[in-house]
Image (tube, rainbow, N blue to C red; front, side, top):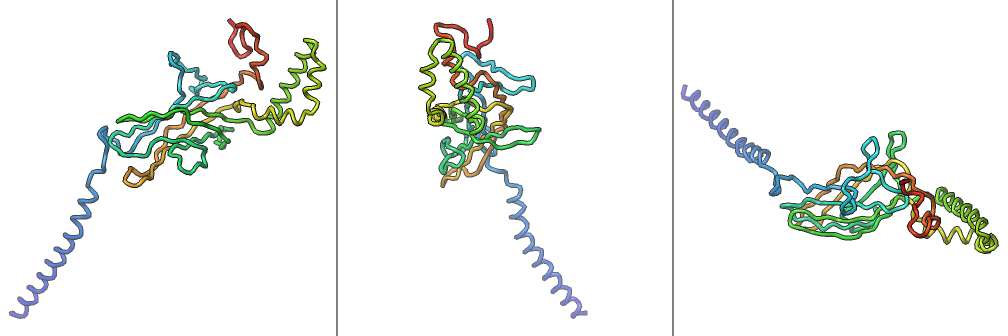
Amino acid sequence: MRQGRGTNRRVIGIVTTVLSVALLVWVPDRAMAQAPTETSAQGLDEPRLLCEIAADEGDEDLERSATGRVRVSNLEPIPLRIELQTDGFDSEPLKASAPEGGDATVIIEVVELCDGEPVAVPVEYSQLGVSKGEVTSSLQVSLRIPLDQEAQRAALESFLERLEAESRKEGRLEEFRRLTADKEALLAGLSGFQQQNRTGKFEVRCKYRSAGPGLWQGEVRAEPLPIEVRFDGGAFEDIFSPVGGGASPRDPAP
């Protein structure tokens, strides 16, 4: 009987020890699992990124297609405004560069929607200005979706054909022939001034990344920005625009 009681006491002691160890391990893990994540003053779990077309002052109503895409011209750079809501977070400043740029914190990508399948296209963009406040920071960017080499050459060929017709009309055909005597050299020179955007339906995709020591670290993406690049004219369209306030071919008829 005494041996039985001793055995029971030993069993109870072992069980009590095991339970005590389990509680020491389990309680901290549970407390950690239930601990709230760090948030900003606005209740954000991470910075928030926005990307939109920067409307001209006094022109807040952007032109949109029937599907809601913002419509922009193929003849002008696409103005973007990128905003980062950083309230409560210490993060790296906004800085844009080409997609392969090393120290950029803002990366801009564009995909063309071909039969519903997104296809990445080359882009060119430059940073125009940046502002930083206590709650938000914003970045102004000029974006281009350049033509591919084949489309660019076709656009320049069309420009020269039109220029030849205008030269013949004005009795300056010989001057045109001298200008285009070395056509390939001329096309190569003109290509550096070609600023048209590719036409079509696209999505602009922006992301922000911060990895500096002692700062918020991570990556956030803005909602994709759907745009439609409309055709407003060919290469060097302004050359053929009437002088003295006449309507440009890309302007709507009165």
